[in-house]
Amino acid sequence: MTQKIYGYARGLGREKDAGAQVEALLAAGVSGDCIFVEQGSDMGRALKEYERLSAVLRRGDVVMVQRLDCLGRDYAEIAAAWQAITQKAGAGIRVLALPALDTTLTGHDSIGTLAADIFEQLFSWLAEQDSVAGRRRRSAVLTARRPRSCGRPKITKPERFDEIYSLWVSKRITLRKAMRLLRLKRSTFYKFAAEHKKLLAERP
Image (cartoon, rainbow, N blue to C red; front, top):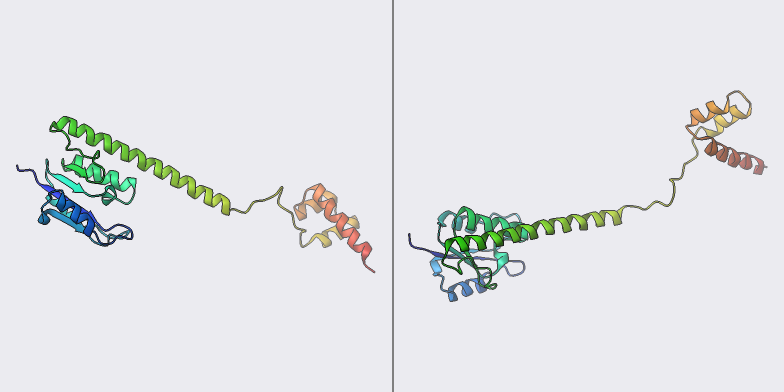
C-alpha cells in the first residue's frame, strides 16, 4: 500500500487562523488536498477535522504538523493523540518545528516504533507531572483562601447562662448540673461566672 503523507493544522490560542501552519505544511511537501485544517478549535468543541484524519489514516502513513501543540492543548492531550496515531493507527508523526520529534527518521520499523514509544512515554510522564503540579497549585490556592485561626476558637456565652447562674448561686442546682445544662467545662463556667459577677457589681 502506498504511503500517504497528511498534514494537520489547528487554530491555537490567539492564532485562530491556521494559515501559517498550512503554508509550512505545503512547503514541506504535503499535498493541499491532504491537509486537514481545524479552525477555531475552542475548548470543548469537537475536533471534526482530526476525526476525519483519523478515519482515513492507515498503517505506514505519516501525519505532519507544524507545531507540537497542534496535537493537544496540554501534555495529556498530546500523549493521547500521539498514542492514537502511532499505536492504534500505526502511522508516523513528524513535527516541523521540532525535527527531533520524527518517528520516520529511520527506515527500520522496529527502531521507528521504539522512538514512538519513547516519545509517548515522555509525554505521558510530562502529563502526569503537569497534573501533579496542577493539584499542588489548586491546593495552595485553597489553603491561602482558608481563614487562619489563632489559637483555640472563642467560646461564646450561652444564652441561658444568666438563668442557670442564678439557680447555681441560689444553690438550687449543683455546679455539675449547671455545667451540663450549659455544656461548659469548669474553667469556662467560672470564667463566665466571674464576668457576670463583675457586670452585676458595676450596675448602679
